[in-house]
Image (cartoon, rainbow, N blue to C red; front, side, top):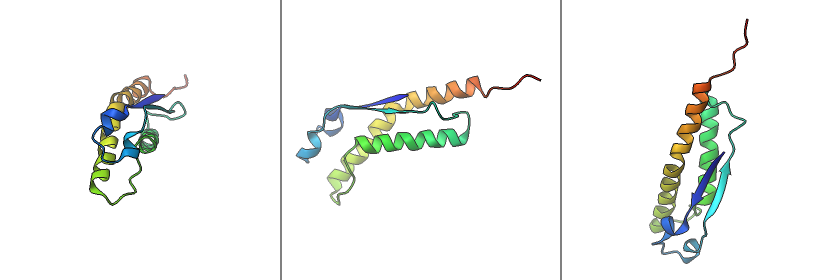
Amino acid sequence: MFRLILPAMLVLASSPFPAIAQSTQRDVHVAYRDLDLATTAGVTELDRRIKRAITAMCPADDSTELARKAIVKRCHRILAAAVASQRTRAIASATRSGPAVAAR
């Protein structure tokens, strides 16, 4: 399971939007035990779950203001980078162990 941690001050320190800047640090867990990460379909689903978690942690991108859009984009980039090594390790671990093969 991944843990995404969002230190609000790191992402939103220069936010011109007080409501966004008041966010607090949160943890989000991304489950993947049910996925076969040795397959493309499993990795694709993992990426979908990570993206949903990142979207849930970052401010909503529902504004036409460029400054807010930049903050949201930066938040997504920071969190994606923060979880990248965990994602890589999980996939590598799954591909190393490979699928179970029945003995003949």
